[in-house]
Length: 388
Image 1 (cartoon, rainbow, N blue to C red):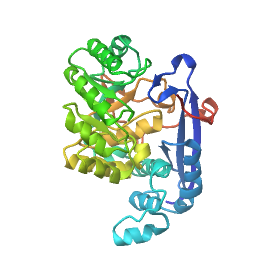
Image 2: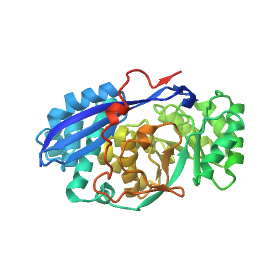
Image 3: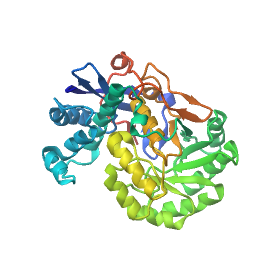
Image 4: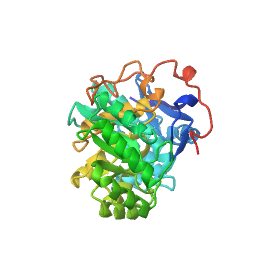
């Protein structure tokens, strides 16, 4: 079997004004998707996705990665990951036993590699007639889900988060900054309201999106402690691992992060600095299945739990299900409560989410079929996704 083509399709969902939400990132105006398709000479096509700047990802997939992949066997996933990562030096990398990547080894390049890698594993599963998670080594066939949202201001958080619990979720996540902006008083008022809405037995997580400085994050974390917060997510900039470690040492609230990290090497630094309790890699950012299983196992070896970051894409959601089912240290799975039809309306088949759990598909590969009218329904629109 040989690879005959690699393409990237850009999609956009423009969020209606009445359904837009605001956090520290700004007002969410739209969501983009980059769908990668790898075709073979045996008529089997794999699908993947990358998370980054849409037009840059498309150019990287079709201009940089495609020429290196044509004619290759798509089931050689480790070889092709190394080829994409190390570029012209991939063969010396394989011969000598260590990677020799070029300058563009992070950011959108890694997201493009992730999109291709996911598609290659989809092909591999279809060839062997097995779901991807079984090829990776199955640990389970369902995983507990958490509802991810929580933008409501003030006491409205009680109804919003309580509504998530009413759907059957036993864990929920809210934003540290809601639609009413940030202050210590506003955040704690919203956390108290959320706890009233969900009761004492539902886990509550708080996400700061890396928006706080170290001293502010420490002060807020200490204020959270009496409200039984299950984790404080990205309290400071993801570039400040040392600062995050300082926050972790200062509070009893577990620290979660990782959605903005690229490759296992970024996670090794988090581990060495003792900066994290729960890792949250995004499979469409950090390098696809090939790299995510390495990251998960590095965490597992250190007793660190794994909860993948899952947002804005049905292909990402599908791929994340498989990594969650295979990683023994995965304990929670993110289910967006935002307006994101590019998750829920991307495939012919529905996701199986019941009673607070996400269930694995039993079909080969990723187990899902793209709808044929996606480009017509979600034509790409350039411009920023968030406006502050």
